Length: 501
Ligand code: GDP
Ligand code: GDP
Image (cartoon, rainbow, N blue to C red; front, side, top):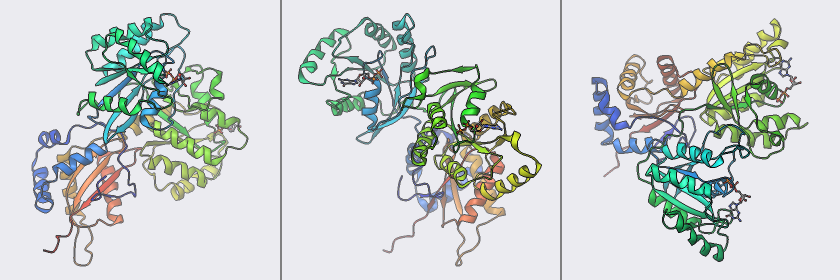
């Protein structure tokens, strides 16, 4: 993020959050009303041309338009290993879910300053017959959403019938393809990889995903093949991702069992022992949801003493992969520091938040009275988070979680058109101007919502807006546009002092 931008929530890095917005320029045209024109003119008078700054900021807070690379290939050729190599870290690998085509997992990647989105495909039932057809279908889905494809083949095995089936799909798609000859751990295999020319996809690129050999060349090739502007859009159709969070013993596994019940796509017994997160597709009321890292939830339940450091890491990892955090709090106990910390983590991660007060069956009137007071005292930072009082034990109100989750995600994805926003900002500046400080009165000249998920606003101002005023603006934004269940980010660009000449 440019140094000129002041991130108002102390969140320096609003940059890695996915979103779905229209191009800002299109937006300008779409609603060029008087308020917008006025605000723009005022801001231009102070800041000069800033469209580029804004576009830059929009690009940084959004994945809209990033190029997308799909990684396809049959099982065990090393796709996951390659994805981890490309994104440069050990990232969670979602286990395959028998009988169900796994939702694709997307990652952000960056090579020499060029960013792109990576779709890791996989997740078919290895025991099911007709695997070639399944893989082809799976690959087809991913390819549709991608700008280019990395087709991974095992160089130590050579081309198989299944590989040929995928090649057919690739040809039909007309998308540019990179043929990746993986497991080329040494020069000999690297030479043998040349036989993959026979697939008719051009020159095979030998790499060893495991050892890193050839990875730089592959990344160069990827960046070359991807268009500058792609079909990037991190979130899409399909089940939303929920991180079920809470300190030990609040009832996470009980709740998961209660909602999952029979309507659940289970990963087999390995789930309890694996180090990798396991996601479960769960039907809450009418819709399906991905509950991320349920292995972590189930495993923690078994551990007598959940080590807090690892619990925190795990919480963070689950948040990274989720769109909405469902935070469980034990209603029968006083709200603790740890509860507050978990909510703060979700907020900092920029996720939509729903709070569920569990063990409601254990509360009596007196306890509920105190709980309300604790909420007022300890959860002041998230008055906007919807809450549901549930009992994992009796099943009370569990189905209501769905409405709450949907509402929070809707708030998280709310977008205010630039024209309306400036009309609104103009009216608050008029009715409630910033207090005068040292003879000066900072004004907001222009504002734009540069991203959703979470909603992020950029304000151009003539002076530093103090925190009370910023909170006031956030409150008014919420009243006006109903950002239920979502944090809001406000970035501020203060006109720089004219340099002495
Ligand atoms: P996927 O099913 O295509 O995602 O494959 P994985 O990434 O899970 O890898 C399958 C197996 O191949 C694992 O045991 C990896 O350790 C191994 N593997 C992946 N890349 C390489 C490589 O470059 N060289 C060798 N020798 N093994 C690899
Ligand atoms: P986790 O550590 O967050 O996964 O918590 P568990 O699901 O293991 O639950 C901790 C304890 O709380 C267990 O003894 C559960 O039976 C109990 N528990 C969970 N939910 C409820 C509830 O809604 N009501 C009551 N009375 N007990 C519950």
